[in-house]
Image (cartoon, rainbow, N blue to C red; front, side, top):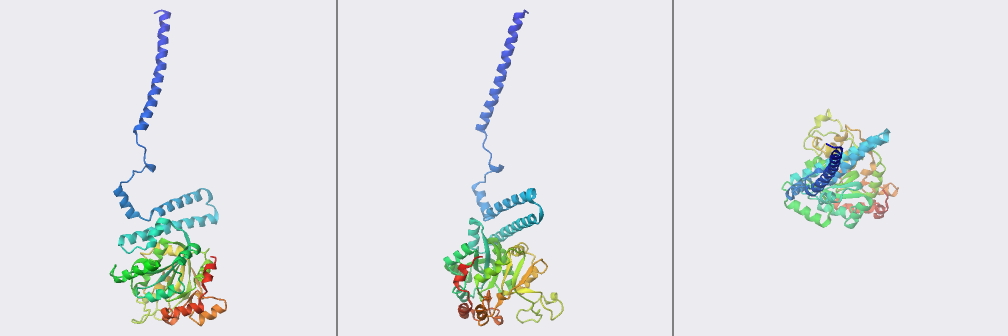
Length: 407
């Protein structure tokens, strides 16, 4: 082979290698373009899109929980950030405790709503609206314990210290105060008693319906269900329980609770320690009297049942542990028992248990307005449906006090 032929072969080889390189690059680009057009775009987060029927099933099971899940995820991010950057010292520990407490509260809320849906109990309108609009922070939720037979009492409360209509909504929006009559359902759910309450609620819109069968001997269970339900619906600093035959000055109650807002595990009321009654047939008989020691012993200190308040963390504790909290015959004893082994601050405030006039009137004239007034002899205002207006006139703080108060 001559040097000339060798050069021609070498030239052809070089040209062939260049074309081969171009062909490879072209094939690769064409493949990428073809692949992008053919392959479907992955679903967001790698999750398959559910069918319409699956979506319906998910809505039934998890209705009202989506907002909580988002909140939980956000709180977990905050916790992660605190661990990574700010987990130093006492303030960071408090922030972490608060995050964990919020997560427990949302978990308890989801459980309460899920239990109501599963049981087929009447679902309060508040449950439906709260889950769709999201939670805001409130100062207090006031649950007014009532019964099917107490229509006149409820009307007397509406005519005195419970704002109605737009005023009640304004109270929630501007002052952060939620007020509801609290009632469960009858033994024959959907019967005439339940229908009467539903009609009354359509007129006034001031009921909180519980997944609970009404009965005087079931007050401990009702109270437990109330706190669990309330903490699932409203994120408040305090949760108040009051009877429907008690007069309440709402602004004074709010101002009293605000002073303890920065504290944890608060249990406030008129603390007492009455005798444990072992004799059958008497009022407030204690069937489990033997648990309290020898005959003649007294109960541990606990708030009288006419009106008391607990902080958010204690309400969350009740909700989370409601299945294992023991119920004594008397509601106020049960509440005290649930807190006796916890690091709880018991606050004894005698303004929460004033007598009716002239007692509360004298105190008001002296500038010491009462939070609540009732007759000890009746465990409430005697003949409250007839007398509460007079108590309100003589011992009430005045409507302007509520709207001018700054909490």
